[in-house]
Length: 178
Image 1 (cartoon, rainbow, N blue to C red):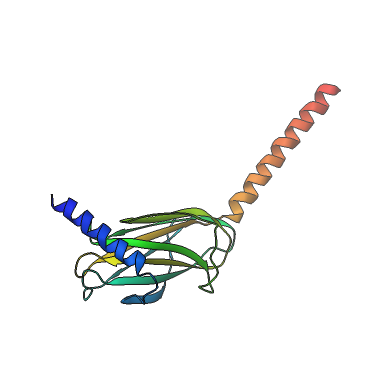
Image 2: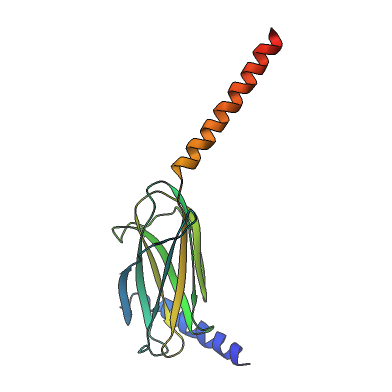
């Protein structure tokens, strides 16, 4: 019963926020997200906000800036409230590093309690913009982005292997012809 009330309250607040989208959000900020490099060929970014002073019904718009690997790579992210029913996302966008040029390289999915996207992007700085409404006091959200890091050495080894296989096949064809 409580979750139904939360959902209805969230829908009402999200609808109000959508109609009041031109208003300046109560909370807004920009963050540069520092990547973490692990032992694998994946680069990760953990990001999010906590707004202990936020009150239910207040709105937010946050920009998270990412620098992606030097080659075209797969990039994906997911963002969700820290507490179910505490935030309603109302807008999601991915922009070039200038913060104004929208890009369509990623397929974006936005639900009231979940924002995610994935796709191939080229090297550069990208802005992930999230907007929404706090449904409970002191709410926050957490996100994680991942990108594959192309390995030039692995690609070179793969190319050498393919060339070697072609050479063996050619030698075998010449031997059979003789």
